[in-house]
Amino acid sequence: MIPAYWQQASDELAQTDPVMAGLIATYAGASLVSRGDPFVTLVRSIVGQQISVKAADTIWSRLRDAVPETSPAAILACSTETLRQCGLSARKVEYLADLAMHFHNGEIHTHRWPAMSDAEIISELTAVRGIGVWTAEMFLIFNQLRPDVFPLDDIGLQKAVARHFFAGERPARNRLAQMGERWRPWRSVATWYLWRSLDPVTVEY
Image (cartoon, rainbow, N blue to C red; front, side, top):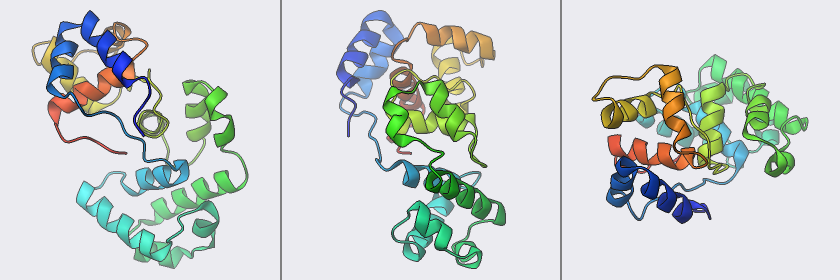
């Protein structure tokens, strides 16, 4: 699903920022695309933590074979041994169990998210073991397609802003935050184009 706001956001960013205009022209025709199911997206984010994309894909494939439904109930019903055999560390097995329990107990309120702020959703998600602010921000951008998320601690964003605006020098966190103000209310979109400038392959989360 492509965000309904994408064209408007791209046009407005291009009109107000010459650098952004160049990036938007270069990567025209591509956009954010949501994977859909929130639980599956969060499971994938935990699976992929601190390992290579190739390793994450292998473990994910094994997990889908072991737990085809990939629902909270199915994860909770799966034995630790089975999950470990997929290649998951003991800690990640604990994280998945905690995530599944939060969904199962109704502590993750997906039905309320449309009326909740980004900060409220981040607070809800970071109550789960293994989900930090950065993971929650990536979820807001790539799954919920929230238009104005600006992940200050993202290394790719820092590198891209350094390249295009600071002659290669990484800006301080407060300076990066100030830079982001020029792209409101479309900071997710600006971030996406900045990521593309480092890696033209479209990222899915």
